[in-house]
Amino acid sequence: MLHEPAAPVAEDFSVGYKTRLGVWMFIPYLLFYAGFVALNLASPESMELIVLLGMNLATVYGFALIVVALILALIYDGLCRAREATDKAISVANGAAAEAAAQTTTTEEGDNN
Image (cartoon, rainbow, N blue to C red; front, top):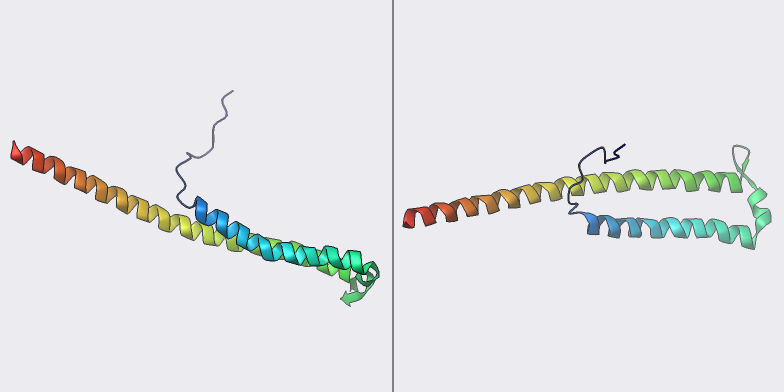
């Protein structure tokens, strides 16, 4: 049985952008998570403090970590899709310009003969 990608894989002109964006978005999340870990290490009893709707700090902070990760993922996806569309349009325009230049060169060479 042959297993191939569901969609054709083309060159991704946005790889560098996606990598930088992912790293820069991960850094604040890492600091947020490090705060959770540091709070647990420094003052584990503070995680028992009721802070919101009868839930303790550990639960609220844990849910916040999950929600922030989802929000960051949606932002990342939106920014990457926009960049991919822009890069694809530029690539298509550059390809059309190169093709037109090649046609012009071929036509000029034919006229010279």
